[in-house]
Amino acid sequence: MDQFRRIAIPAMFVGLALALLYAVFSASSNGSNRDPVAKYAIGTIADLDTSGKGDLAPPAPFVDGEGGAVTLQDFPGQIILVNYWATWCGPCEREMPSLAALETSKGSDKFKVVAISVDDPADRDYAKKRLGELSGGVLDFYAIGDGPEGWNVVYESGAGGGFPTTLIFGADGQKIAKLEGEADWASYEAVALIDSLLKN
Image (cartoon, helix red, strand yellow):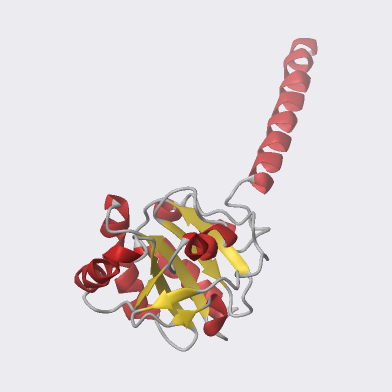
């Protein structure tokens, strides 16, 4: 019996310590249930970052397909998925059909994919044509403005670390999440994320 106690009691403490470590790790991981958005950070959108949640969408202007000034505030009441992309960026082009598929399945007066080209303004016509090819004409064309201040919408939104970068802003204009790098926006987890945002 004494030998059993010498083994069982330390084993019990080790088990409790491991359980405590697991609980602490689970609570601080991306999949934590504390943040209802972070729990969707799996699969192709595993790098979803919610650390900037609550930041306001920048008021910096960009341009639409006709060259008119637009801001992220011009989509009132809509959840917007803002994707910064370029024709010289292979991963940007690869993910564009999935963004078009997401717009096709979920686009409405409550949700919109806003693809903003960061191509040089001199290449704007080509970028517009390329977006039409990559998205099957589903996505509206937007681009950064002319001059160095044209990049303000990118930098002020927290992007600029590489492309593609995608940000999601709520209907209230507050940032929900950011994802740097390529993703499959037509995947189950991405669609489930957008569905959950539309329900709340």
